[in-house]
Image (cartoon, rainbow over all chains, first blue to last red; front, top):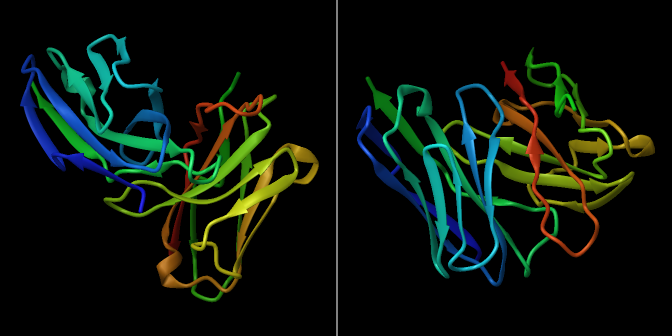
Length: 112
Length: 116
């Protein structure tokens, strides 16, 4: 069964304390891996798409990487405004073209 | 580009009532998706459209749920005879597909439903 597991469930950081979020996946064939940010009571906001192992993408303090089994979202020198839930999702060749399979997310809190 | 919009943003209803939500996708996006999200969980796929055709429905979409996308523009999701278990955030997303690729889905703000 296709599955996405994110860890940790929650992460508390001090402002400026860098860390990484993990997304492990098991799918029949990866078409793409997506990272979204979700603020409370709002819809997910797109961050990155990764398609193949070894690929990396950066945006401000965020950097996403992809291997054959997992993806990492690295947060460098986070600020309080980076506090949010970060969702990982995959699209697979074995499944529907429309269906993204999401993990439960990592809730990040950055304290000043 | 104003993004995906959803109305209403909040809906409180009594068990047994029918509710309808609307989603307006990003203009020129030919694919439209509906997801449901409960507290502490990631979004779960319900159904999607390419233009006006409904191409897939999840087993989560019971016969009380129906979705339409007339003329391939906005979409509506109706829930008949609501149950307390239907309480959730209903998310709409849209994308542009040229066929064969893996396009990015852009989400709206969601409609939060509470069934009393």
